[in-house]
Image (cartoon, rainbow, N blue to C red; front, side, top):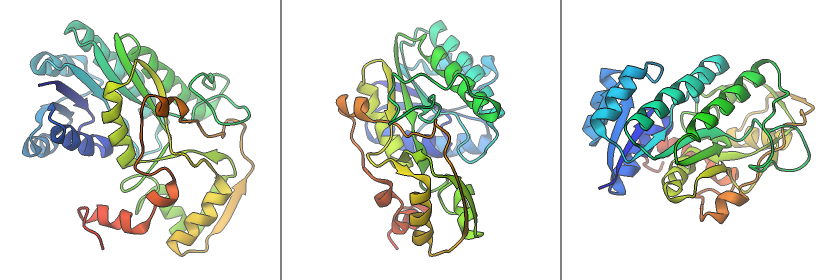
Length: 294
């Protein structure tokens, strides 16, 4: 039986991913930071380890004990906006994970990345589009984190990097009580008219499983329906039945969306090919109460 070790195993993606991996017949180990998380994982049938991705010894001990065939790196905080903290986790955490993997002869790794750090230009960005190395401020911090994570991941022989679009669904910025959701509910919305590429959290999970069979490389994981921010804002306000004040600013050139053509050529498929389907409120609230339709 193939053994898969998941970091961020009790996070938004990790919780769903470990469950699906077990359903697919894999033996699953998971990293969490707390006793509560360990208990949840063990109750689900996951071999749980308590550790800190920023402390090499705890990572190395976990990898040494579990002896995985594959590592899936899912650590990031989708609910917060602390770019520096996320960047530290992406760079230093991935470095610790990769060093432990190399020490214990793990030759297959998959890492979660993001598809909105490309340089400015016309049209949808592809995986061949350079990252935005001329960025400044918070954006530079994020770009640095992506670059560091991806360089470390590529040190493993079989490496797959999934650059996710803007994640939506329960627990994200666009879910109930999320940052974007609350802007609309509180009637004060600020965004640009730049092009956005979305991906539902359930698709993030399913494509991660599909990508276990992908060739080494980088893949944009986004839906088929890139949308301008002002168009989305009007649609989302209507979905929530609110009429907020909208401050729509001109887009920066890097707000261009991303192409999923390479992902599809590898055989990748989506549950929600458009965010319009995935943001159906029935889907949102059924997920919140345990996947029961309301």
